[in-house]
Length: 355
Image (cartoon, rainbow, N blue to C red; front, side, top):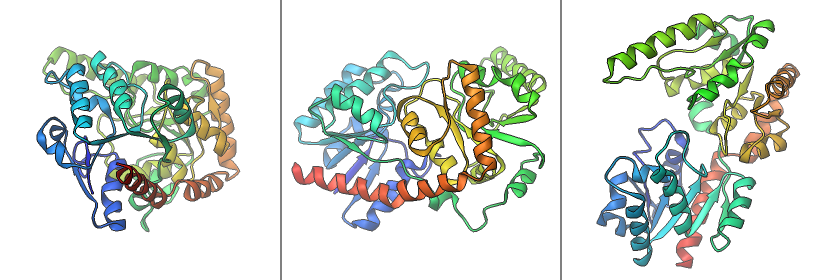
């Protein structure tokens, strides 16, 4: 069985989702071979594969080379040649500031999929109504025990020391990119409350200065970076990405986690925090909202400052009462890596047998 991901080399990207499939499924079935690379989707190599698995549809039309019309023609061509197309619903549409054709790519890929996988019930229910003739399957997001749960895992104090943090302070971790200014404003909106309660937000990517040929824009963003650092000392951030090896340091150092999204369907950080037994707060939206209810994690209305403050306060109390251990046990029981890749392998086998 030859399975192709329309995705960059999973061994070289930070997100372990695809990598965990390519590394583990061949151990279940030696006849399964994985291939990847965006260019293959558009050439004849694609006809050699049994399953074409699309994770993030907008990757297929990035740049100027291919239009949404090209994508639809390609999808119909592949299906007319008997190719099985499956997709995983990570998002309904792309994140902020994407081109119209990238949004259309999501609609097209889902429309032409033979099967769609969902990380939770919410998106599955939405798609069962929107695409009633396409099978919708649950495939829970895994916790990456093999990547992060090592024998050398530092204690909280050791992690704080390595990151240069104060042992006696409490830290709220906001991992992942801040994709738009409104996500920064979410944190800045409660800044006075954070200071009053002597709380710190550990947000490595709060504001990044991206390299650009426009020297004026670069200098402006550099000055803004320095200004934000000086003006908001209770938000700790840097201008460098966090190496994957340092992820456990940040997770161990924090008291609770915060999902800083305004609009959200899924979040891998929910599972990261759970793996480390860290109570988290998240918007009451999409699949993330469902997970909060299942696990008893505090959720908030992203448009309501007081709702966020209340959720953080509840999370800190849960953390002080060692509720994180129960969360970790839930994660290990319900979101194991082995269950994830085994179920995906079973879905692959079933759909190939049907065709």
